Image (cartoon, rainbow, N blue to C red):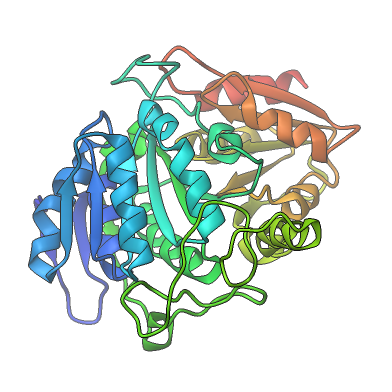
Length: 371
């Protein structure tokens, strides 16, 4: 529920909203007309807001009997041409695994909101964590890529949800918005701006090498399969056809890394230390960069909003002069592993916590000064 709103002549609309409400606003702005989900802390507010808002626009919102049925309904809706979204947390994203693979193989556009909490298993349902960062890349059979975006504020929950729907249609694949408990439950005043899609974006504008979706119910015959298939969706074992399919599923995302890259850089000439964060830890990184510079440290900052494919070029640019990189995250150092791979020869320090508490800017500044 929106607690306050104001509109001044000549100024952008400002509202006091939560991250969950911002996600819902973004979904509606992107034309979402189908939602299915199951209650799970801390993603439940998104389900509740969607159940409240979707009937107002003639859309459909369903509380499924569990996570598996919820994502299954979303796949069916996407196959019928609807703009579908679901939301869950760690245990639920684990249950999504098989259907994520089906969405990749069937090339269905779908937006998945993963509100992370402390794991594993039930873990700390009301504690913050970022432990799903590797799962959303590798958590389905075959090793095929997903696009994963990570908002670091309430406002970016809105804008990146809109972007997630655009990318899901453009690449005909699942797109994960990987957020966390603190971002989703945070309440702040934001300038909403105009995030409605332009008329041209309402079309199915696919990327090069991606065929437009032909939904069920159209005049053309439509075949649907999770098995390897030829261009007519007929199951095949022909090695050349199978190879072409699987390489295309990889290439349609991997060859568009530059287009998918979203990194906010705050670079300082001569900086020997680079601080990297995403999600809620981005706030500590931004604050720590300012504080460290006030103490005389030369430091740069990078906030990653496109976790997968990893924005290699942008991070290499940010670390061009750095002797070491501090990676702030709320897991056992999962993203730091990836950064070590793309920055050989640079010391990568994992500044992580797994106790349900946030990485503080003071801890990052202290590590910078010890360097």
